[in-house]
Image (cartoon, rainbow, N blue to C red; front, side, top):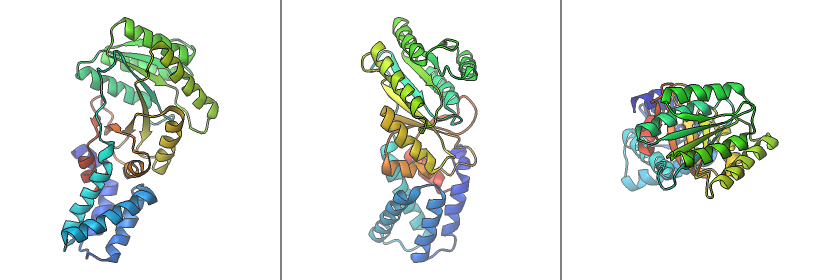
Amino acid sequence: MSRLKSGLRKTGTNIQAVFVNAQIDDALYEELEAALLMSDAGVKATEFLLDDLRARVRANMATNAVQVRKLLGDAIADLLKPLEKPLEIGRFTPTVIMVAGVNGAGKTTSIGKLTKHLATEGCSVLLAAADTFRAAAREQLGVWADRNTVEIISQEGGDPSAVSFDAVNAGRARGRDVVLVDTAGRLPTQLHLMDELKKIKRVIGKADAGAPHEVLLVIDGNTGQNALAQVRAFDDALGLTGLVVTKLDGTAKGGVLCAIAREKPIPVYFIGVGEKLEDLETFDAREFAQALLG
């Protein structure tokens, strides 16, 4: 909680400032509107939260700013609650998880942290280095595999779909609990690369009917409303089942999760609050709301 609070301190400080010596009047709501928009919550979520807050203030007959601040925390927590869902492992063996994201979002690092998380939970993991366009990505994933002492399926310059196919088959043959497939980072505007992602997903389905069982998108918590655009584009192309939100460790504003909850309520399985292997936390709506409010 303290790590998250520290990571979202920019937004927390802005919202806290609104309530200092404040009266419950139109000026308070206007300042809150500005603070929420600055937090990257977006217009739709901001309007929704302010309408909800006004209703709560009336219903609870709130008389001071401290009460209003608590009611805002409740409103944000309730808005974010649908995003709170645990990643389920074990219904399928192996559980095949395909991971996508734009370059620089922290996708490969998040896979390393997720591998650590799953291993801590007692799961055996196999990694698939299907980001074959970037030699550095293969090497980076190899480092994470060594750190976590797990096996990796990799081909130099190979076809990403073929690597994914081989990995799913190997995971089944070796009795692994989870196969994690790292795909090449790309922008949703690069249509030929998005088509490549769709192909990887289709080929995984040929290796194991029903797979991939999870399609995760890694988004950078610093990219604001652009993160919502990425969620829309990747969901349209792949049918996302979950999100991993990274880099909530200093400069991120965090409000974009409110925008996602209002427009594309895809579960947030994990949030990244630091660089260490164990700095991948399961998402808790109320904790996140409290951190947003400082």
